[in-house]
Image (cartoon, rainbow, N blue to C red; front, top):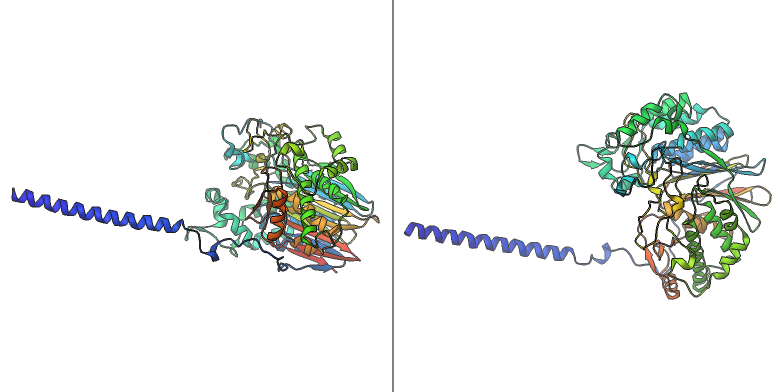
Length: 599
């Protein structure tokens, strides 16, 4: 009995001790969690909106006399410049720079994606647009993502039929001067030697890491097995399977993956990953020459991308703002800044409302729609509806009936050649690293372009239905925000080559930089540096980046605008401007990149 009693006492003591330990641990954990959820110290919080304008960014405004190339991949600008120095055409330089960017910035663009290009021929004073945007595969259906919308973003089913390479080939056949292999060779050299990962590429690895670590090629190129982490910025990247593919393309030409030795391999790899693109889809794809969207602005002519690009909405915004007759004083006081910014925001809202009605012109009749949208009469009508002291929170007020999908990703290249020709081209695989998968044997990152289509029945957060004009149909191209643009003066000389990456913010960013340069008297660096505001109708708020001054935000709020600061890089603009026989060029500090040129 005494033994059992002693055992019971010991059990009680042990139990009490255990309870005390657990209680102490729980108290400690509760205290730690409480501390964790306390507001961060002031130094670790995001800074408040500044009361005064920020100093200039560290980016450099370059000045050249004969030619300039701007890309967001430093070696690619140099490659483009070197091609021009060999007497290559503007298109030769663009294709060479695109090949390069598809390697060093494969998270944003490459052979598995598509592009839209705006070209200007000085000798004939003619603008052209080449649409090499991806198309929906032959077996795609409008309801294919109804049950799992994630599949439109992640994996091979998210891929549209790539148009990148055949687009390069088509542009080079019509406007190239140098041999094809000579245009591809500089990128082959970078591929063989390897390139050093940029900070931007390093930053975005974490966003898609859950996919990158599963893909054999991406894991080999970017993942460190020893540390179990993604390789840091500055690491050497050698995408060997992609290099081998480029060597075949240099020999065979632009048909290599569409109707050549790599076609069947490419299709088999895609299908092995769960995609539905076939060899027949690859063979059937055709890039299309289109007339660019063209508008007159104060004696200048603007050429920009037709649908499925969004140049029409960029032109519409600028046509509205042009009638306000802005000057260098339009932003010189808080009162003027408030009125000008408010007018910009309202123009953005009207443009994004009209964007919900449009789709691929091969599938949707938009001829009369575009004619009306581009007319001075319609711009005057909308301008008259913009009141300087009020706004609306109702999308219907701006004419919105549907919503369109947001897009993302992209990379942009701007080129002005010695003979006065120009190229502005924006390329994309949509989301960072596209669908997060590669063709195993070819090393090509597959796009996630199918995510740019609207899905029937999927009502957005704001209760608005998707646009039927942008539903999936085999062979159809989804709408995109890309707006590669060239502006020409009354003498037929290029005054500006501009475009941007950054998804839905492309349209507002490019229009803001053009407005500041053409009408407000900013230098090209000042125009690119300037802090930006954005509005895309859904959500019904002005989004803005750090640097927009607090007094302006308060003034916009007083008019009735809801505001929210965004934390990402926003849109990255690449801009060249010619003035007084000099070319001024700036690569956006928000991402990096570089400008090279010729004197």
